[in-house]
Image (cartoon, rainbow over all chains, first blue to last red; front, side):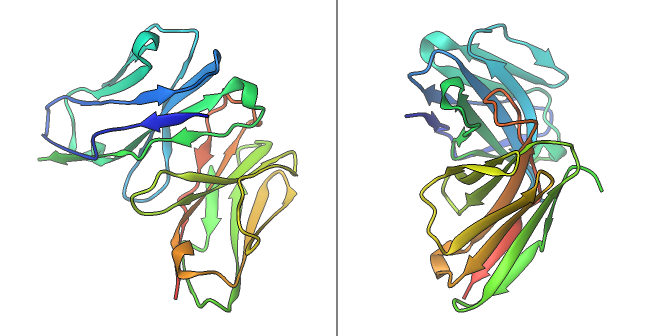
Length: 116
Length: 114
């Protein structure tokens, strides 16, 4: 079974502050993939980042960065210097390689509100 | 058109109606998906198609009937729905059904069942 937990439901920050979104996952698979998606008010989910279970290197891409810790089964996501356009719901998701199907398991999402 | 498109964007239907949701992807992908997004619940995968063949039915009630005539088009036929079926229905596509592929989503159809 796979499970993704995003504990924080709504996070409000003032523009230019950093915001970190927590994601904890459960899987028995040794090969899996973790994703972050953004869902703005328009509705469509936008792919942001992907991480493979065998690559724990953390990276920065523009104002986005992520911290993948296999030891704690966490895949946290940080937006640096937040902007009003970052206001959206952010979803963490997991897929297992052995599954054969690209069955994404999503967390409940974090509603991020950036206050100007 | 680019990406993944869905029509209609909004749909209101009675419980005895029959309607269809349409999804089209312009990305040259081979896998397509239907998801249901209800308030306060995680996105739920409903169906997976790979090269037009259904590879996943996530215990979806038979009042939802998918159809995939080719790799670019996916339909969801709706019949005798219940009010609890009101939700945002999202279509997605990916290169194939490998777990490493990111999925690209359409804007969704907001369905209200009266």
